[in-house]
Length: 334
DNA sequence: GTATGCTTTCGGC
DNA sequence: TTACGGCCGAAAGCATAC
Image 1 (cartoon, chains in turn cyan, blue, green):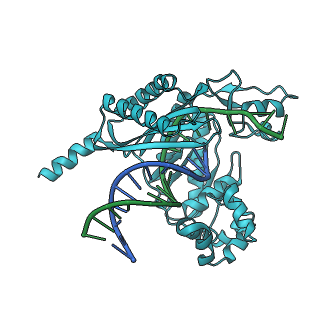
Image 2 (cartoon, rainbow, N blue to C red):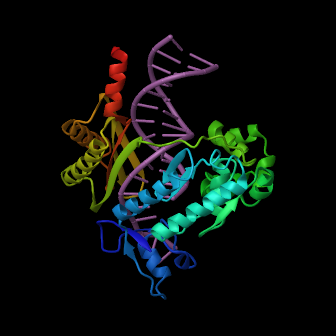
Image 3 (cartoon, rainbow, N blue to C red):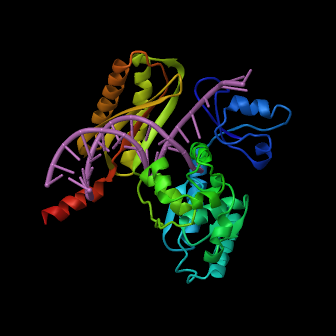
């Protein structure tokens, strides 16, 4: 198990990921470490602390390998990415399979890591395909196989988690085939316009999201768990200061500025509260960002004297590139 | 009505 | 029976301008 330990007690935290052996015992990402220890008490399971910088560097090397095997490339998480091989394969699925097979081999020989790949006409189906044979799988979905491939429980569709699954069950829908029989109006009434139309299309394997390069982040945040729950600003302040400094440094490394500063307060009952403010113009000024984050936190504590904080965070959003801004200004002044 | 921008919440990994 | 991180992107919900 790889665990994220919090500052609270030696055992406080959650499981970040677990191997397939541990998963047989019900130990999966997100469960409390204490619960995982109970589930695994009869075994000699090993609990390791997370080493994010290490994983980031390995991830980056693997992403570079993937990117070199196709055209448009989109990183979708530390261990997930989309690669458009339409051109590289000339649209032939057997050629795409060969590309994927080669990529898997290169990744294994360079990094000793296996991965699962899904090849399909769009991102939605490729994601489902990569999920359906893990670990170390390679699944190809041809356009003719779509409906057959999609049959099964609704939760194989990304975006259908426990909440949506439960609401669909209320509508008498448990399989993708049943979902595909609902009309778009019913779905939009039940789930809203965006999710409703997504579900309607997803049940048919339809998706036209482009594979798009994400060059720069849209937000940066830092969060940490307090040693003890508190509503005392004098205790929260230095923690917030540290987080704000760290996230601002990261933003400066990226040569970016931010338009919004938010504070995040997770209370003792685990409810999440945020407060934010917009800065005009966008800034990379550490002093200003510190002042704003402190003021937001102070205002939040004043507005809810009952609030007892468990975790504290800060987020910078509305990020833009400093050089980009200069270029836009230069462009506008011409 | 539509576009746009802001704050807050949600959910994936 | 409970237990509980640190990120990220995007949607929801609301306000304003035209």
